[in-house]
Image (cartoon, rainbow, N blue to C red; front, side, top):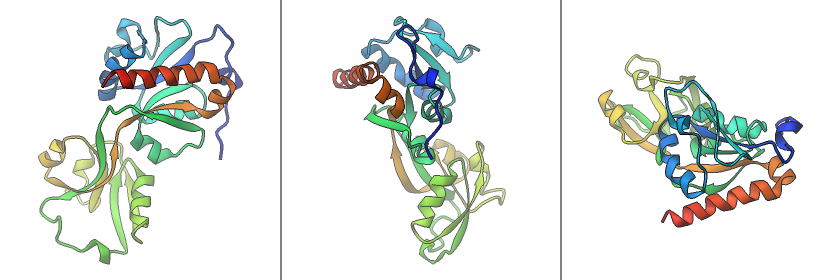
Length: 232
């Protein structure tokens, strides 16, 4: 189903800024050099994690930045509240919004969506013989698709944090989570047993905004593409 879009957001007048949605946290700091190469200079407090502000001007009067949770970037762009965004491929895989177009792999925020389980029991059973499995994850759709592709029914316990506690407390057999270094898994007695997908951050745009404002949106895509090329 196609998302419903507020007309004012998708087709602002010539004096209304476009909105660039950026994710809070680790990726926000990695965005800094890329934004600079793209010629975007945000207000100084946009990267302040203690700031209560969520919307920030830039040196371009026709571009504002909003800072939202990583999982929410794609939603803001899909529904037209933001026209452009930077979003992890994991989020795009989980939500699969038809109105989100991802023209550029930005090569930042590198990590992976992986299966992990207790080190003490990893490898002691043959997954090809399973018919069902209980998994904890903040990625229920990714987890279900992954196991369905192997003919396994996945009962997904949806958690948003403290995933590593779940197997040890008997909540599930394994977890599907985002892994960067694996140190948190190791600290909690888990091992990474399978990589479902490698993840990087993508530039995303709203398809309707691209159709209604091709010059403005297209120019920003071109600037980010040039920033990638000059970044080596």
